[in-house]
Image (cartoon, rainbow over all chains, first blue to last red):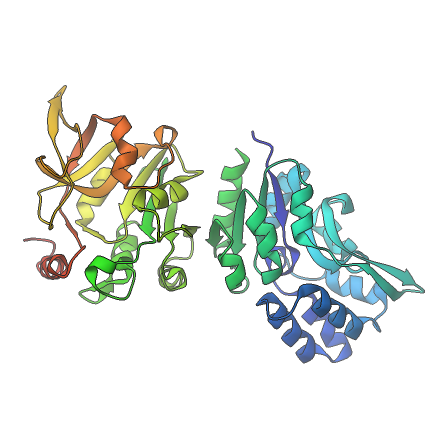
Length: 202
Length: 216
């Protein structure tokens, strides 16, 4: 067995839908958030500023409500099974806020020590401020072991570019062009993706 | 059906010799593209890898519409490298055996299966028919016809780009697939019926062949 580690994007890679647009329905801003998300995934807006804009629109929802909704996000079960089988070498790498996604990460079967994400402070169950926005490229650079990175959006392109094996997963939504230009592989079938990942474990 | 085989279809090239503005795998012969024909023949195999480069999105879209469970590998340097580079990229992390298949090769369905199911490594050879082919001299070794070299000058059979080799014998390379096979010679040859499509003349011969039910 080799020592490769597997870094998964969360939205539309491990989850079956984008998380923020689902949340936005709660505050009647679904259309604006979906549009911002799409433009960001295609690389038309920088992730950091777009993410902060989207958080700003959602900050009126209590944290407990957000994490309850996020926890119910449907998951790609075969990918989750792969993660469960290989817990020690799997990580989630997402721009989403720690205070929103913690229950979902637990549901996926990983401790928060295996989740790289953006961080925020909370006061009285409300979002106080965003402290940091995750740069996925920096995460890959920190790993000592060879990396397999799996994602779908423009903000995954650098993570995929720096990985030994960089995979675009198009099972939920089309893979961003910028990611395709940097990937070693692209795959559209969840079972096929997991079969390939198991090969990479050997 | 063997399940210790990964099949690598190289579709990264630009098809410039054919004078068409699309990658050769997308060339239609009798209403079906070459890649669709190959995928039809390979429906019983579960590890299909398609290497893409030029017009990658078009190839991916077409292949995915026929079959979802394909692994695509990218040859981003398709302008400067040959089929050998594409094959290595597709064969990486492959099973015990890897099969090299050019996306522009029109092969008799029975013969493709014959190569994949061959017990061990082998190379597919055909009667020379294309313009300026690479040919293969052969020799009988222990009752088996084996390829002993690749040459533009002499050889009884034409190199087809179709081969089945052990993954652990594959060393990285960027030229033709047969350059990767040269260190493994001699290697058994399986005679196959094919039409490679490199020029317009080749294309017309191929169309006629399919029309006749893969018979000349």
